[in-house]
Image (cartoon, rainbow, N blue to C red; front, side, top):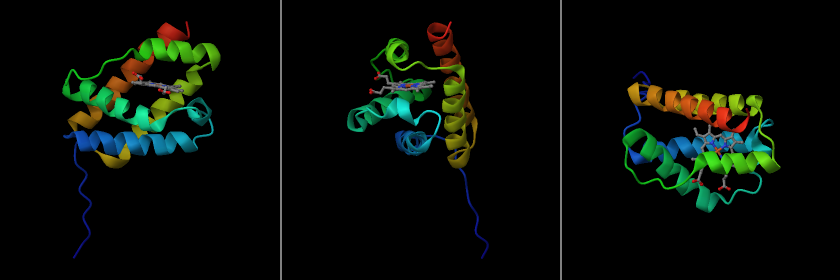
Amino acid sequence: MEDIDIINDITTKIDIEILVNAFYEKVKKDQQISHFFKHVNWKTHMPIMYVFWENVLFYTGSYVGNPMLLHKELHTHMPLSKKDFDQWIHLFHETINENYEGKMAEAMKERANNISIIMQTKILD
Ligand code: HEM
């Protein structure tokens, strides 16, 4: 029998957790941006990221936080550049493309792009 790989769209919280986990595996190994994450407490950060993306995609209303301020503060002691944001986006898109396909997968990439652009205008300009 032929082996058929079915790639599904993002539909559940578990899908988001799979994506966030796979994304950070890439981030941790990345030459360009891994150093920004050296001091991150993964036990507390991962659940925040799950909730953040669930809120962005499924409008759960469960994320409380201020990513813009957090990255602005990060930038003051570890300067971020456009190249860093481009690499973050590249890894994020790559992770989605490797695991999911469909309307939600496209929406997640688009939302990430938009948030990244807003972040850059608030932080880098
Ligand atoms: C060069 C690009 C980026 C770098 C180096 C970066 C790095 C970081 C770091 C170090 C943290 C703090 C983790 C902690 O200790 O709690 C963080 C938090 C976070 N990042 Fe980024 N980030 C980048 C871009 C983005 C983008 C484009 C998004 C969204 C599309 C994003 C979403 C978040 C969120 C939601 C948090 C958690 C905020 C909270 O704690 O409430 N980041 N990021």
